[in-house]
Image (cartoon, rainbow, N blue to C red):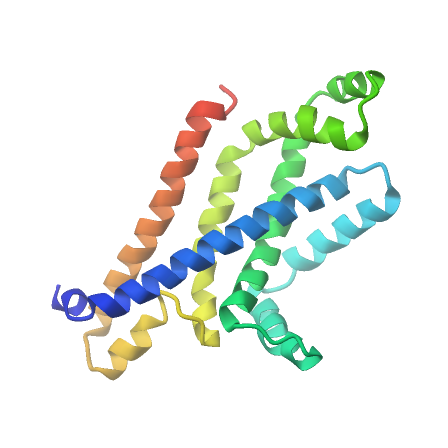
Length: 214
């Protein structure tokens, strides 16, 4: 217990860093995932191609490699931002590919007749998607979206290797100070459990209120 009590501020700083990464990257992933899912089902061929390339490239690229590309590659092109922002971009873009596919699977569960009925009433593709299709699709994919964001929270640990303040990175400082490495990781694991269980609880509430009864 003394490992935690004597280094509570250090753990707290790392915990807060992971929470920030998770929240900001999740918001980015949800927005990009929504956009790319819209592209994947759009009637315009170029948009479908763009969405397909986005998903296939990001889903088949190791996250660590994407971190290297964003955190070390973008500054070479004159884009200089705090490392935490770069980490949010890497995590958010990577996870958006999975969110996109989850949403697209939900869209495929909505009967085509509803979209056709909306178009027969004069609604545009954007109106049909936003007011008829996606609200129903989201209700059916709440659990997998929650699981994807839980994976994002755990993936944020990679950011510590790139000088980003996050929970897992606290073990380096504590190891240098001579603390027991086992208990160091135990309290790090507890921190991640708090974050992931909070996300799980949030999506359980969403599923209970908005999910499709099975």
